[in-house]
Length: 191
Image (cartoon, rainbow, N blue to C red):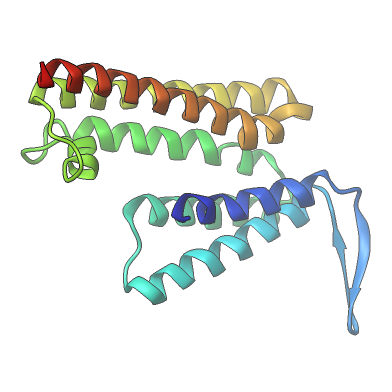
């Protein structure tokens, strides 16, 4: 359920982005709905509402949520202020690269990698496996950020589709690969 909630702002962004722009009346207020700028506003509002609700409920936000929210507000705000969607196109690559740096830095700070801190309560793996998996996440986030950047500035008509569905599919496939590595090692341990 938690992962689904994380995608709600992105799905709403996608829906509004793909809508043909039109004027919508809400009481005595009229505003344009559809296209990149109203979609950016919807993304910002939905993110603030969802992550704000999580903060109120849990009295804290996970670091990944805080980074995502800060990036949405910063890049979304610049997109709206300068009326230039190129700012928003930089959000996904930069967030991915921040995650890459966090995973990489965790190898040098503290006793456990970030991946082991996140999943160590559920799995027992040798330190070298944790390290290899952590490095694979570093590489994945670097490549995913580069792919987002390439698609955003090379294939303008497809960048939103790639951001929402392409990134999701690539992440899903990568996670399956990670579980295959884990399952091989767990089978070896049991023998």
